[in-house]
Image (cartoon, rainbow over all chains, first blue to last red; front, side, top):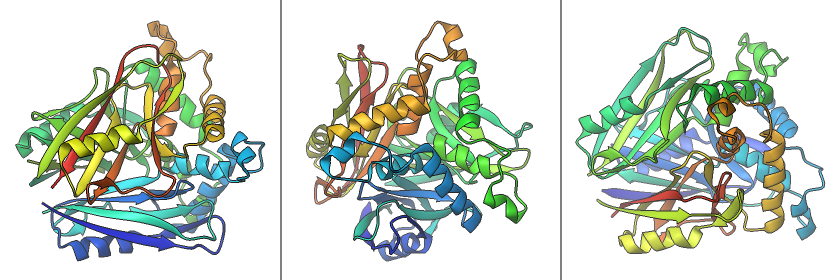
Length: 137
Length: 137
Length: 137
């Protein structure tokens, strides 16, 4: 068994921003030399998400509107008594999920035709990391 | 380390339908010959979910009503400007999660007494796939 | 490849209670002797969650209020026709997620500065289990 670890870093210009990272994950798989296994892609910060869905700007807009409806910013969250103002970012990232595992078959991410991996930032403008852990043979 | 890959296919008669797949996943584990490890079960289409919960028709009904409340169909989603009409299916699958990992101990899915694996289709009536990747020793 | 399986047990005094388990997971990794790999932490009961987020009591309070808003208790759920009264617990655990996978690098959970692992109980006061499956080299 082999393991390979890579870290992606993001400093998004906008506070909320979605970034496609499918190719970055495939690159880590290529570096690992692993042909059969799995790769974990996981946000290391707790106000960001990693998810798999469509690479279509309309849907990405819909996600953002929907997340604001289900987990609104600007409410009087108890978390804000610590001086933070980002409780909604913690909730939004929970709805989207903070990690995915992708199967690797014949050295390639074994994805369906429309599956794309995204990093979703809900409290950006500062350096954040995603860990990519490849495991297999 | 060994790896084994299987694909499950679904063409559900209804647009929205939940299908229990615990036995299909165990079958892939049996085929793999793996005794200790993990199995990833992941929807390859972005309007379907894979989740673990109760095999009880009342609760499955409750899930469907709840998902329609939190992620309604029929709204004026921006994604629909592409000609699609399934933005709600993308949101519903996000709430349910699109993948699970199950531990394998002594060749068997190491599940609690009520844990069952389900495929949840939100835009069916066409062929969809789920990847089952078994990894271990 | 090595695999190691541990089970955590919980009987929370309150029906709903969040418990930090990061150190319990690291202990299972230590026991395994695995330096490079992954560890799956998964609730074996379907009214409990396992998630990664902040160790801050205000935010934990916010999560509980938010979950009650999105998945209220006391509604006339169809699941309750079986005699159960915990349909909302099944929904709440779905929002939080029932499992996480953590990367192991140099024998340690490879977590970001604020990442903590939590067990979230939504129907406690009875014995529940979490499986911890470590896999790697």
